[in-house]
Length: 286
Ligand code: NAP
Image 1: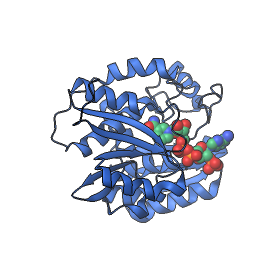
Image 2: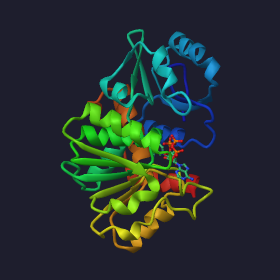
Image 3: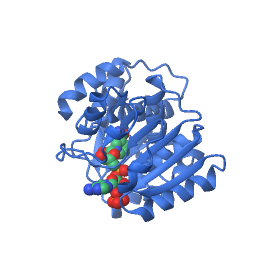
């Protein structure tokens, strides 16, 4: 790394930010593309958020990512928010341009890209979403926007799945939306894709699964947005049944690539080898 007076700083703000993989992904992309940029993490407490954004403006920081707990609160401090982030109600990417902070969200698009890259078509498909937290919102809304036929949202706290289902059916009139308790999953086996958006199975509770996947047909595609571990027990169980599986690492890498496309304009040809990124992240995660 060759830092000089002209190096541009990009960063992640959140609390906590320990063990974030974002610096490894972004700095890899900067390095292989010979970009004079560096990516760092800053732990920012909620009561300092506004001050930090004002400082970023003064310093001319051109772009940054936002993680828990600021994805929603930050919206009130931004000068403009793109339609997709407004729809999701959360921002994970900010670009500083012409004196203004612009908010975007690349989480849902990162997930959908991981399906498309694996050759899975989404249009007209029936999707079962497990969980109704932040990750589930991003994934569900983007799937709705991408033309799926039906979305069923199951969550332990049924009020949250009801609220998310209500938001989606309000905005996407042509999509059938249902919600239920996570425990009722066995009623919903007629689906094409199942996505685990709960944190069940995440490190250190790697022996846990959100639902029994063996009741679904082996034509069902099974996704997990958890990336630690890279292959959750849920995915391992699906793999044993010869189901096609997609892990959360693809979404994580794709949302980072999409952030870079926002910072450096969509047309910039950024060379990326996703398998190489997965290769070195493997050592950070497992
Ligand atoms: P969140 O907003 O806190 O939501 C957590 C979800 O998991 C809620 O639906 C919660 O249900 C459910 N849940 C947690 N523990 C449960 C349990 N014991 N039994 C049943 N349900 C349980 O978290 P998030 O931000 O959506 O993140 C969820 C997971 O996705 C995390 O592992 C995170 O690392 C991962 N993620 C990955 C990416 C990526 O780029 N790959 C992006 C975002 C998130 P209740 O509502 O009932 O509490």
